[in-house]
Amino acid sequence: MPELPEVETIARMLKPQLEGRTIRSTCLLWKRTLALPSPRVFTSRIVGQKILSVGRRAKYLHIRLSRDHLFVHLRMSGDLWVKRTGNQPTKHDRLIINLSGNKSLIFNDTRKFGRVWLTDDPGLVIGALGPEPFDPEFTSRILYSRLQAHRRQIKPLLLDQTFLAGMGNIYTDEALHLSGIHPQTESDKISLKKADKLFHAIRAVLDAGITHNGASIDWVYRGGDFQNYFRVYGRTGEPCPACRTPINRISIGQRGTHFCPKCQKPAR
Image (cartoon, rainbow, N blue to C red; front, side, top):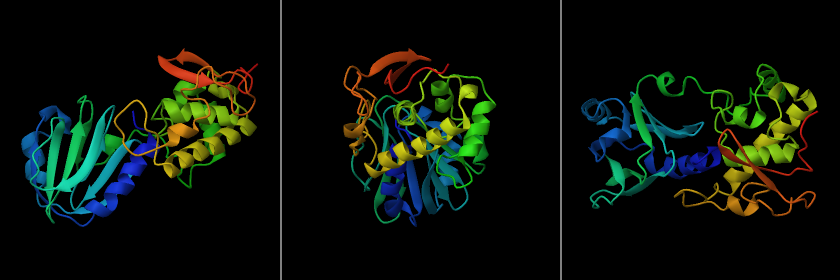
């Protein structure tokens, strides 16, 4: 599933192509693509609105319109393209939004897990999300306080979007390795010093992911090469870049988890 860097990359790609355009018409090719509202209400509300901005919140693409907010979650295989209006839909196109300037925004989703929301209240979609890792108001001390407020293994806690928005399996493994924290460490056992390391590691791996346009792995995302720079993710049995110890793989919360048994020793 695409994580923060991949979604951020797509938002940056779409931004200059979409902002300022007006929505002329829509073509919904698979009804369940719409999580909110109904297909009839969707069309009647969205047509005529102008695209004011394109951004990201957590793993959601956020398109702010003149009256409403359009959110897209790509899930496992979703993707967004801007093409010239009038092309025949391809096999896995689920929603086409025709725009001014003879352009169309196309949501393509092979596995049909992706969803689209149109609402005048963003809180209905993103209200429960945790802080953004790059939010200037989010600090290492805030992270430490949030860690102390829970007694959960750190890996699944970081994956919890209500705790911290945008993290997924790849970047969580990478951040835990960079900060030297074992993925099964209980969150309330993490010291202020370790929390500070984790805070900066999270930002570092996400920033590196964005710099490399994300990672192209396990889904149809088309642009990035961060997979060539993984420290631990997907490198089972290969040498740790820090100490040369073979990388281990275990399952935590039904998620494959990669770590170095020497650099990331269990907390005592």
